Length: 178
Image 1: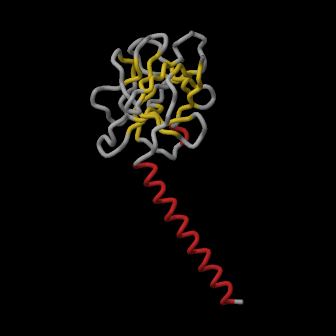
Image 2: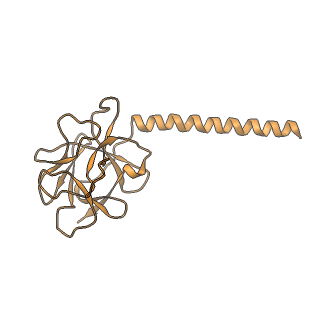
Image 3: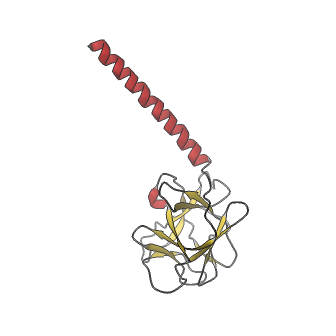
């Protein structure tokens, strides 16, 4: 009985080790070369859980995350797919784009700008949810993504934060509007 138990334990340990190796190599592949998401061009509400919508109150203000405010266009975004696979996000009411300074860095605020800024959409684990990532690879050794700012103020602002493909809280839900 002892030999049978040892054999079962050894087989189980090998399976666990093989699964961990496969998972870690898959994780490395997915974080290094995550596929770009194909989102059709159109108008979308972009939100976090509990209907917290990406909002631009003034043309070049910081992007906020607010519940529905009932003002047409302030919480609606035109997603335009580009030929290189990237997208731009233009606020429908203000006509300005979700953007950041010329030198993106961790905790840089995301604001409205008159000139288009490109983003990469990477599919998250949930349907219709995507990580909104700064294109061009790592900045100072880390990829950056649109996320909630660490500033503890109301209303909550957005900022560039280190991209974590496994953090569902960092992903944004895209809901198509006709």
